[in-house]
Image (cartoon, rainbow, N blue to C red; front, side, top):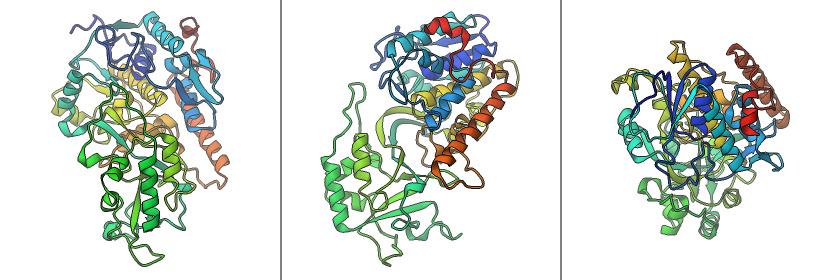
Length: 472
């Protein structure tokens, strides 16, 4: 491994996060070496050597300004995102979503990186994280085995997950509290008068069996060839438990013991527990409901659960191969590895993580963390303090979740309004409340962008001037 002479920052991985990290650091004036192993070594998922290749959907989700995904994109435009500028220029008709011609999109990102005078693109696999200068690790969910092993040694064996088993997350306002009751099993954690962060959806025997029948009949997401699934007994999909026996779920994650329904004074036949997901209690996850059901099937079937008839899912369940950190134990809001972890590994220079490996889910979420990681790597290369983004912004809220989320049950997260601090005083109308969240977030990001000298780099809708030729 040879780092190009004069390099200030190394970025490992040429996906969305790595490309935006390299671009962001370069725009800070840092000389960047971006390492991408393709096409020297290909992955089972990629088809080209382009940077930022989309291996799944060509949609970057909603582009509407009043949505969480739309707010995130607006913030990324204000910070000068290469990824969003390329997407804006390669967009195809898609209603309110930002969908792209995937070939034009990845070609624009590749040209933008290759033509930037501060970036050297190195087509070589790195199996070790270099020391002596700031490094951004943005190797994605298909991190090579060799580098994954090195990351595992760096962070500790118990702090690197190789499997993504995420349960659905629900908007708390859409849970029917006249049916769902607060209680922790056997009253544990309720000494202070709270329910220890748990809500419970009670099912009768008839409701339980009807629910199981629908799970068994539901369509599953087909596996890709590069995603062999090895089922771990401690992390089984709900549909696998349903297949194993008539009462397997009732004796497993849906067991009712120790949970008294205040309406009946008895334990229900079965219970679906919801765990509080954030400090503001605006989000709840379905406990042990990791699943490979198709998303439409999840919405249909999970709304059969009493109290969830009108539930809005801010994220649906997924189960596939992944590599991501137990970030609340490892990362700061700056995306840097915590000093104590780095020092235990006897590393001198700062290390940043970005993209899926940091614990976010989604194309734009990954790229957004790359912007911040690249910016801070460049700042630390010139011995300036790294920055944190305001909690009122969507990127700032995502980094807050990464650094301070539930350490005992950390799961990748995408952009959603439940991550943002509530508006005070509370606005009753949901649409007006969400609009207020967007306006507050954009105001905070505009001010931050100006203070960082980035406010003039992009308008709200147009790509950066220097990308215009690359993305045309």
